[in-house]
Length: 229
Image (cartoon, rainbow, N blue to C red; front, side, top):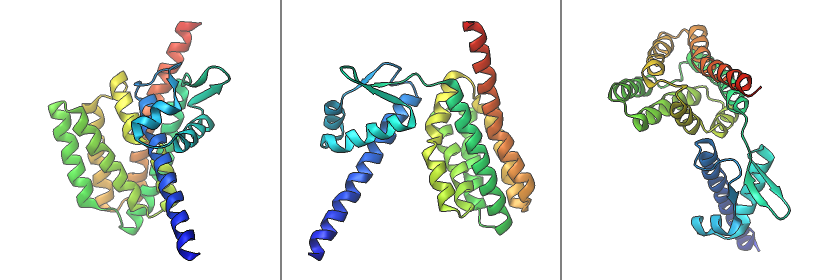
């Protein structure tokens, strides 16, 4: 009996992991524009792509519907919803709060990996100078993930992961809201504040760095609303 229970638990864990993989992959495509409003998501086709049954696909689509990214209707199936510009803005507002808390705590306790931050900043600066968007996104995520990990709060880290930071950054670069040269320059002062152990300055700088992007999205959203009215 014990082996059967263990096997069932293992199968459930694998299915949960696959559901999350499918959910995150589809959400990344929605956020970066690969899947646009009105595009249909067919369970059978998605299951074939991920080489799985339709059960984890169905669960992933239900989660995406709960999150507001897709909608299911009789005779129309599941389709991508129009994502308001304000949704992306709000995600960055939340991210700014999470990272400020993590940076303050991590800097106070000295648990942030400063060497990893230095490597990420060097990579960011090199990528920005070369205009290498892929490298920029990779080093940007490494920098901010290091800050979050230093906070030592696994619950906060899980919520940060749900924001799909690198995917959203890539989407904002594509729209022109993020200039990799300008944004890249904002990381070194954060690194220096952490290295000095100045938790209040480090927290303020990281919050301003992220919240500024939310402000830009807010300005763009208002401008677009004015054009449509």
